[in-house]
Amino acid sequence: MDNSDGTRSALIVGAGIAGLTTASALARWGWSVEVIETGSEGTTAGWGLSLTGPSLRALHSLGLADQCLAAGYGMSVITNVDANGVASPIELPHLIGDDRPAMAGIARPELHRILRAEALRLGTRIHYGLGVFRLAQQGGQACAELTDGTVRTVDLLVGADGIRSTVRGLIGRPTPIRYHGQMVWRARVPRPDWATGVHTFAGDGHQTGVVPISPSQAYVFVTENGMRPGVLPDAGLAARMGDLLAPFTGRVAEIRPEVVRSESVIRRPVRTALVDAPWSDGTRVVLGDAAHAPSPQMASGAALAIEDGLVLAQELDRYEDIRKALEAFTDRRRERCSVLVKTSVAIARLEQEQRHRDAYPLIEACHHRMAQPA
Image (cartoon, rainbow, N blue to C red; front, side):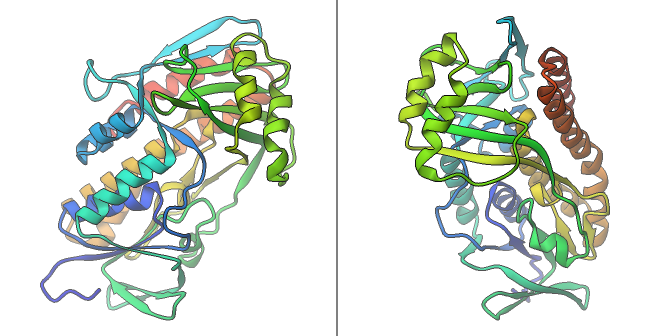
């Protein structure tokens, strides 16, 4: 990727939300961008996610908010219902106009499709089944040896390769991945008519909820407390998730049969990571979950990843010196991302202590704090 015309070059490791958003943002600013991904083309993890206000604001800056809203389901309220049946609605900040949704649920494959198509439209090259094996600095550039034996020498290398980031280790940023005693189950189901926003329901032992991801689809989640991380056979996941929902009544009882019938059930541990050291080393940087992976309680992991890509491009446009730009990027993002990760962990702890009424104000306050400019 050596460019004789003066165009700056970037290699992005990871074709998830952070990697593809970063690719589009850099390409918009005139960079020559290549993305490598160890997984297969079309592979995405999970059924759906929430694009909170900060996500939509950043996507709007990249010209993608309307596509995401059209592909997903716009919402403005989170309704939390405690174990006594008392509802506590949270009205979310509208960040792209009062006449537009405050957030959106969207199927992960749909979001990935939109981000990938935009990156390709802007000239990004994307390669699957390819990872990074070794990194070095060479003449002020980043040199990456890839798993197929080829070498890339670029002006900028971005590690957007998730919570188990290889790049993070290669640049000397060992970071513990912490498990928080919860397993999250998700099942894709038809959207109930009443689910026009996010709904959560606290039980005596666990918590469940419904998130619309399109006019016809939603996903149901269950946060199972006090569990060791482990893998269960796929064949039994739907029935087991149904068992976890059995103690719930009302609207949860209505959707339980759909969960039991679902052929799309996954179970994942709640883990977090936060890089305390500088996120960059020379012309190499980590972002997204590779730098700051929150637990799902704030539904804001995607927001941080999308913002990262936009902010990185902005700082690289401000500074001709890439090293200074990466330092400015970290300075601009560190506190915001740290607060989100730590808040998500605090909420997870309150859930396990069955202190849901204490968690709801913390969730609302963090959403309003995240509404501040990135």
